Image 1 (tube, rainbow, N blue to C red):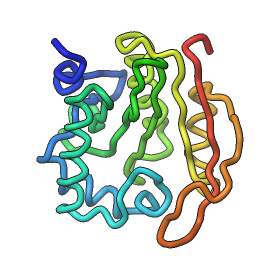
Image 2: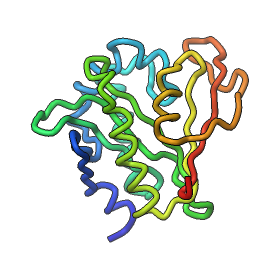
Image 3: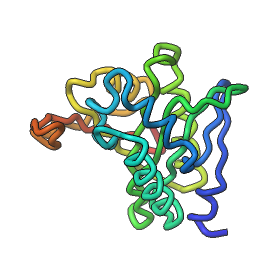
Length: 184
């Protein structure tokens, strides 16, 4: 089975969560989640606004990247609950250098219970074991301090500030860079 086929068939479970590849059927739920709270506003990788139509296009792109072995993008749901509450992913997988980028976002309705950390840890464990990654990077806008706290709990190390790295809603945003090595 190719890396892309494996990514499209992947299902991860943690103590409280099930993670499976995003599907077009998730578009409405993910659009709703992304438009609540500050997700679309503070996430670098979430299209803004994430309408259902844009969500379908985004999911198609993520599934194509998974099929090509360049990403693992998983819908997150709580055990026993079919509702999708967010996404976690390893993006920009670089097999030559054994590295990738971590991204995660969850509904404000489930925040504060450690689920972002749990979902990200599950995909990280998969990346380090099954994908033989050596390094995983993560980025977050400076004003999204909650993501920084999750990364610290995941044993990521801060590496620096990227000034005006992204533009969100027409405004340049500073971004923090973090990394975690397989040996951390």
